[in-house]
Length: 362
Image (cartoon, rainbow, N blue to C red; front, side, top):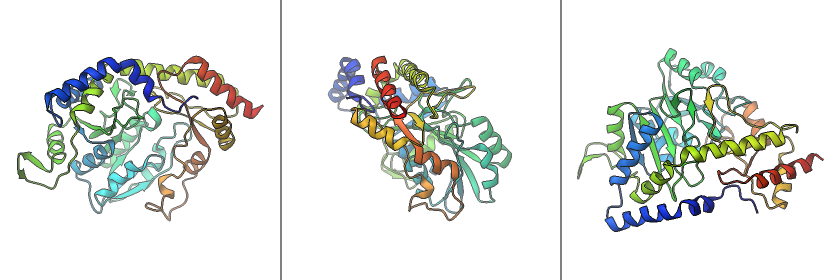
């Protein structure tokens, strides 16, 4: 069996250090927003090149609180991609704003900057790009559009920890960068966890109040806040893993390069890094009209796969639009398939996956 994600393998490699750090937290009696959270915030900010980081309870909360802190609310429109997990659009809907979905680029699967400008109206407040599957969106083009129209940019980096755009870390270019540490992410904890980056001290302070019931000092509540505090155990685990993230991401690139080489002569689209960007391959996703046949063949061979995302957001009942269909997104949603991807994947396993796929075409 080759799973889609091997969470046990990474834990086994780091078990001694992780167990020791967790035991230290349990013995300390300090379990929420303690020294490990504070240290993790500093370490992540330094690693990615941001001035500030604020730990929260999940990636969804990271998006939600960032949107609140950015002042987005009822009557505002936020331009974003329909090809992403629901949390991206949920954050906009939570504050009473409207998601405006535009089509995606057929090569990167990220939001297509060429479609953004025509979607801007007098109510547009922000652009919310997603760095999908570990590949950054075209931030140069997005920021250029945002600056020309006076719009905010909030980055959804849930799948792209450590990805870079030139010399900049993903999540450091907009007003906020939002991360998820869910177990399937390339930097992950053993539960839920999230983080928001910002270069603004005022934005950081606002987030700290929002995550803690709107309280800047105990039992004084100056605004409506939330219960979204990163716990010490998850922060301790993340601090261990953060020291290895470059190695993890490099091994993901190794796996991706092997897949691409072994599948290169087949009539399928395989992902790749774009000029000036580093892909961290949270997922390795191929596109082919034979998606369902390949998925079934891999399943029969004991190989795990996943379809992200079979029903894009503009087709969901919650956000169904009457606007014309988003043709590129609809086509990719019908044809994409994610293959096993994790740093510990061995060459013989990669070859077995590729050979099984080749068998469909043979």
